[in-house]
Image (cartoon, rainbow, N blue to C red; front, side, top):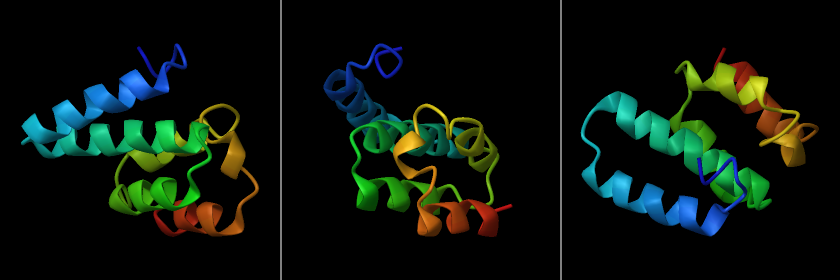
Amino acid sequence: MLKRLDRLAEAESDLRIAQALATAEYEIHDIAYNFACIYAKRRKRTETIECVKQLAHTPYIAAIRAHLDDYFRPFAEDDEFLALLDASA
């Protein structure tokens, strides 16, 4: 919710706590996806790409594609970013 409200520092802080507690694969992937969203909104390219790499070949790649017009807009025309999405299809 904090991510959607654009309260990115708070969202990132909560994700760090969740990351320390996560054990299930789906939790780990969900956290990586939400970090990717936050980093993208902050235009942190390196961090965004690292998160996307963690999500390769997971259903979250489709979610990233679905959000190229909002969360991931800063990278919607980034060739390396888009190539990662295509390679993970």
